[in-house]
Length: 507
Image (tube, rainbow, N blue to C red; front, top):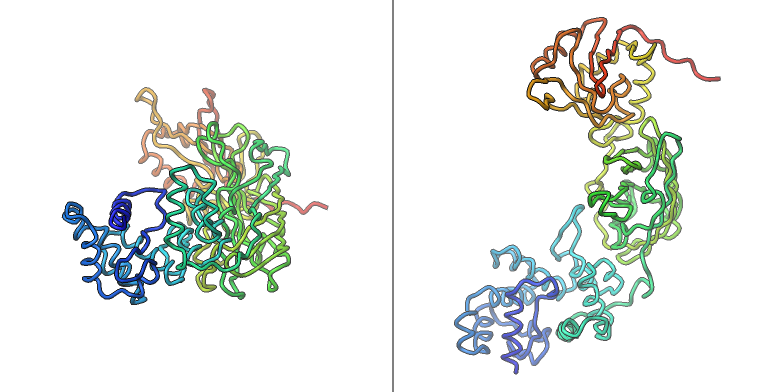
């Protein structure tokens, strides 16, 4: 029976399976261990002796196929690493990437060092199941993917957890749990057994021109279900992050994308609990991207003001975080407000010196940041003050605007796109402008979605070379006239470069 059990386990190791979470069979009597995996490891003699003893347990027909193959190499390398307390033996002894990770999983769980677990994801974190078992903390099973969370709970809370699985999976769960009994001795859970992470959000438009889809207006989000990363100590640069996929995915009409995404950096107060400012200078930062009602594209707003209040803060793996937030965002034209509350936990602590590298959203050194392809709100305000619409399709532009565009030509198309020469019949060589946002320079200059640029100061735009030549030729001209086609109607946009007085402050 022992030979059959070991053979089945080796075969299982050789076959990839999402359900196979732990890499080891029970120790059996291999290596003189007396029946437990822990005693098998402690009795380990050498890699060669391990191979010899495992091979001796197999029937001849199995040994001829398995001897020297990956499963035996994996098992013996991992036992060697655990016996010597040296994870580098996994890296040096196994060339296959997946087997190295299997070996490291076993090593980390056996010796109880979660930082030796394989890493994954961005920002980088240690694998959930390995990290939970190596930490011995049942609460960290919340950070484990759903397909292996039951097994994690069974190993750390008891075999009875397997009862929720189907018949075949239940038997496998019980075997795995029994194999690790005595090796993984759990600590008391740091969170109540009934604890469930949650985020509830309400979004509201603060300007009448902004329309939110219902799916982005009020929702519960799974974004913090698997916990947050937190610095291992307080100090300058101590933040936590609410990140990315915020509103739940609604697949059909949104093409598989979430209707709202959030990136929010929250500086933790010195005492943990308390409020932190968001927006402006010196406080937390953030941005929100969402689809407007009836639109196929995202709009991105920067955090302009607000607070995040931590009502509960425990800096330890498995520690609880609770709080509320109220943040206003703007793209320089429209405004949006997000309010809500959250419950989550610390899935892992990272070195304080590494926290900055975990921030997806960076603001640079001089002020509020912006996502690629759009202008920061402050920049939009400065441009609005120097571009004056004097009558329909006629604009006075301060020369400083042209100077700034010449210094940074990307500014001209931030928040919009200029397509390749547009042609439906092969004879039309005009350029098409599309995806023009209200916080873009092209919008302020009067361009709208699907405008086709036909001529500049009377010269046809039939190639990219014509476009760049016009840009060079007219960079010192006092008046520029752009002829466009807008939905079949010919229009002329006239730009006069002259000093524009700043608007008088309102009383």
